[in-house]
Image (cartoon, each protein chain N blue to C red):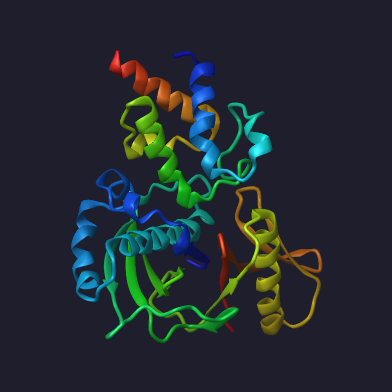
Length: 221
Length: 85
């Protein structure tokens, strides 16, 4: 299945005390996912970061599937993360950059998430300030292009414009110059339009407080 | 509680999570929490938890599924309140 799904969580906005309450995290995590925290605990990663990492994986997976299932409703506990592998020696550091872009991933949290009969793969970048996740239909991410950018506005309209502009910069690097814009289809999924025609390239956008991000698969040649 | 009473309280629950404060005053059953009120999806769990506390009810994930707009939020809260009687 060709699609795109990403998510960003700005960690300065999460309520750690609330996240650690059972009544909160039980609406995100299913019972089967609790053992996944063991490895994160040993690495010194707080439980609230783990909860929001799983949220990010699940939300990204939802976006990935929703493009093909427009009526899909996001119920976090129905998206079950069955595997999360931490890179060896992971220590959270500051993002420390105005923006970061790439294709594929070197050192990230690699996950598997299941929904219904679908099995999807995730890659998540963890920093002190944010969690950024990208989803793919298989474990090969070299053709998945992604970007994360710091924004200085908490106005959602401005963030929306900012993330579109950020994505189009990257799109032009891949597809060359053209009159690109990002619209939303009738189901609310972002679609890429070039010179007035919708392109067959699924894109995913995310913004949360001080960060925006995108992902899209490079076309198979 | 009537639907209007639930709506009045629901506005207070939603208020901390929307940046679209102007629209909050004119919401109706069709108002979408994410598309219209610009509530970040990461805050939807907060709204459910706050609604549970406000109305002293429990909203399981099947019911939470339905809470996509103001009307369905009121439906779920009303249903749960009636179960308490």
